[in-house]
Image 1 (tube, rainbow, N blue to C red):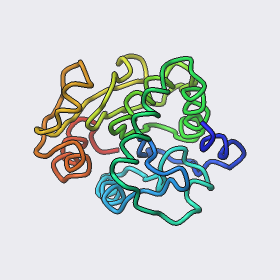
Image 2 (cartoon, rainbow, N blue to C red):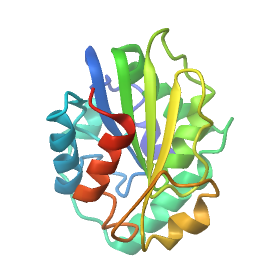
Image 3 (tube, rainbow, N blue to C red):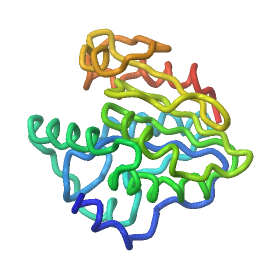
Image 4 (tube, one colour):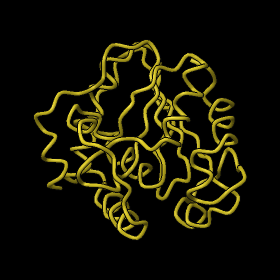
Length: 207
């Protein structure tokens, strides 16, 4: 995708960390990858339990964090997220791009990496998982939040969980495996709710 190509030469924001948490989602805007205020609040809550937040969205580059945030129309954002999810099948060029930008997070994290894979992020991490090198001793906690598509299989360094809102029928239809937690809310409202934060902490634990 052209918007991701623009990040090819931009340095990663990942710095050395013992335990890191980051959002992995499809991008609603081609111009910036800043996190929403609600996503930031999730990171703030997890930081209280020892997780070091990476405060930018995928692909976690300096360019991703440089442009001011802008709210996109819901319809436009939904289409873009769907396109990215469909493009992230294993072996695809887009999945390779996801793996390329994920690798610095893996390499620079010592003990644990917690990935909050919301909506299309489920397909993105699944497409990239087979193309990254997980350093020895690193545990990768993948929490699908309202996942649309399959998550990676658990095993080895990968610990995989799924959370959805009680009214999130998009995730019910789009994710075939069982859910580890069901919380109040729909596809969008549950993604950053206090109940979801609590579920993440129950599943992944403190850092």
